[in-house]
Image 1 (cartoon, rainbow, N blue to C red):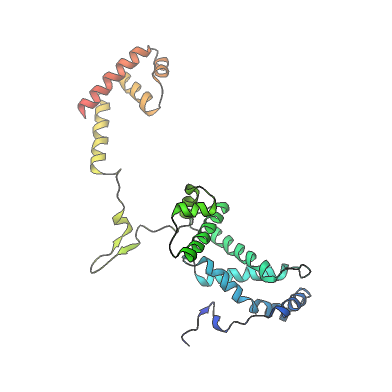
Image 2: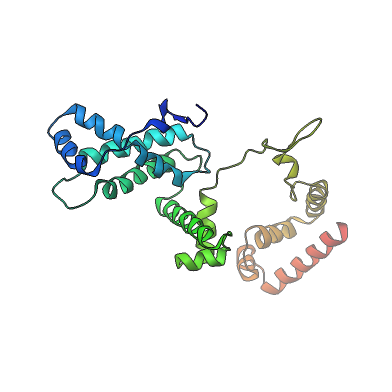
Length: 256
């Protein structure tokens, strides 16, 4: 059967749905300790779990894992539902299942992200899907921020926070021969040959200064002290510090 889709060994095409008029009776029986009624409630609401995990499509997590976590949320909903309140079971269960899945994603993420940041990101994704359904195109960050009544920066940070990290060895293109990895496209503007040569030249230039000039340069540009603070530390005037500093910098520039 080509349309058959199995999640955790369950054929989703054959899942049953419990009629609304039976739901309350089964819930009361389950709360009274009837294991068969509880089992029937779980099996009869698996489609509800499937509908919820669709909201988290496009992520790297296994659908089987999300389904199992969603079932935990469903079981908690069945055990904690108050039959005396005039509320539909699905209205209570859906937020419980979503919360369980979000907790799982938060606790098992490669990068720990705050709960508020993740909630913002999921709101943004839902707003994005609603915008696409209405306008048949993806929204800009400005339109998304307006729909959420948030700053653009907050939306961007939230969406970046839930993005899965990419390995430097992740192949991005490949034909005959070696594949091109992410690492091959990442430029290092700091550890270049020119940078290392400049570092060596600067080190040699500073080594040629007198001990007092070295001390002044170190305190001024490595410790971030003012000329007055340097003058007080080495017991000379601020004018002398200024003169020695200018002379030292001039010789460094000339040597480099």
